[in-house]
Length: 254
Image (cartoon, rainbow, N blue to C red; front, side, top):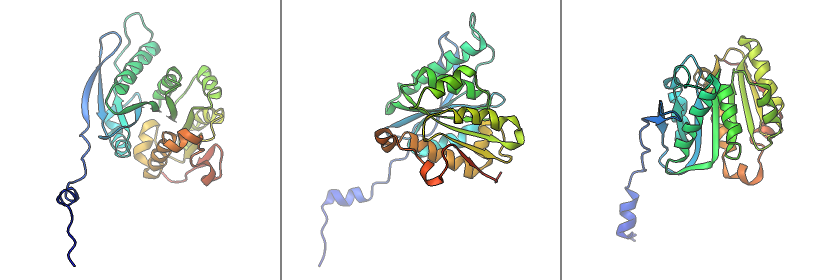
């Protein structure tokens, strides 16, 4: 017996899957008209947004592969380069905060970005910028990844009073104090999905995302869990129950 399929079904069976757009470099105008160099990774479908705040001694190209991996999981990602110096009549910190807010505004204006499901990823000096970003957009930011960087007492207090914000901390024991000052933020978080991951020698800041594929995989999975529909609906504790640890896990690998 011969099975006859409708012509439309036969044609659809041979239509290849949609290919996401290639990452594109963009210039984003900041509050004072300065141009911020950024790269946008569009997954080609509606989804949450991620802003990457890289190490101060690097540039956005160093997080390119990580950003591509996020995008392949359905995230709209923007990485950007900090301006040199500061704006007129603004402190260095206020300048960077203002720039970060314009990056936020640009990202959530892109088609398909779910502005109520955002994640910040910060490394080294980018930790302070990422935490400030999370505080100023607290109703939208569901999680923040902080890697090997300092933070302020005010930011510790913000995390402690914001149970809706999950925090994933990462640092290398080889850096000494980095583990303790990142861990102190994580331990202050009331969110059940908050975790601390300490590596023996995993690099510094966002460089950790390229030094250890195991660590990068943990970060990618954690981010996806914080912006998942299940997490929004139930306040899911993510991997906490499966790992059996509330706030701390360690890797011995590099």
